[in-house]
Image (tube, rainbow, N blue to C red; front, side, top):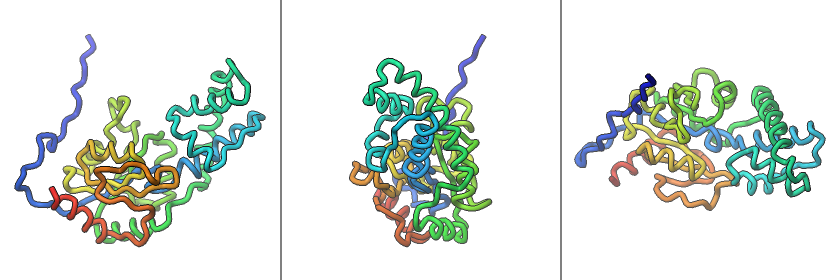
Length: 255
């Protein structure tokens, strides 16, 4: 008989005492896409365009057009939508499936070739965290096969204390708790960490895990509603470990 596995619970799920002291910042948890690099714009978009070309399709998404299309979360539907607008009709879904597979192969090849670069100011921030003894974790909804090499390229060898993807979760589900798993691996409660996101979805996921969250927007997410964030910035702009510590302290002091 199949036995349903119990969902993992964490010691912080019972809540934080009202008179608890503010804990020092003990880790920073970055979203890979957007916070470390603009993977959608510089990686995925380029791979889509290369896949279209490989299949002989006269489609090339500009940065602006892709920003609009990225609102369609399902990538195959995104491709099929473009094909239908170009008169492919009922075969759009089938052709989209072939293009999607090619896109994934080309994207992973592109990542491994070093075509995706870190956001400006990220290197200074991460180095300052490293020298301050503050562990760095990275989360991604992508496949571990390309996420780990990309994190290594963006941050350097041995900088990320842990890298968490849905492949690391026994039961990832439709909304995998990557932040909770990262905290579990770091041995920390949410009051001891700061999350860094770049999208509304990333902010919501971090807040669901009860984390103070810094949002560093991209061209695609600027102007979105980031209510609940500890701070919203358009770039790192000289942010270092001491700035993260102050932001984290101010957030929890206000609670």
